[in-house]
Length: 82
Image 1 (cartoon, one colour):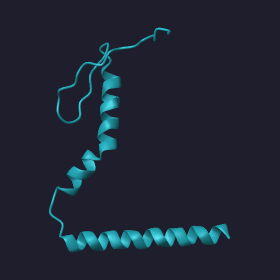
Image 2: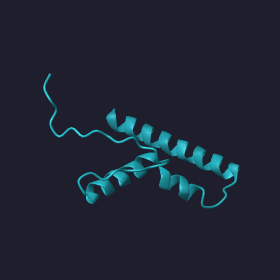
Image 3: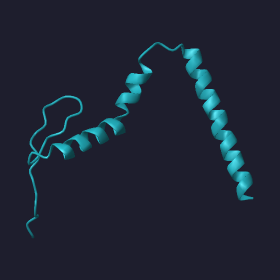
């Protein structure tokens, strides 16, 4: 077997939540990785949603309206294809 170049052993991560380790004092890369993790986990969206209380009926209404919009776009797209 060949040895892998630039192979770094990952230290055991005992931190809770989102965390990033900095290798070779490369803070910019660590910040980029952290931003990507936050974006992929939808953490900011959840915080924005929990900022204030929204009645369940309003949530249902918004979901229903979004479903109608999705259906409209899909029908429009099908008409363009034919």
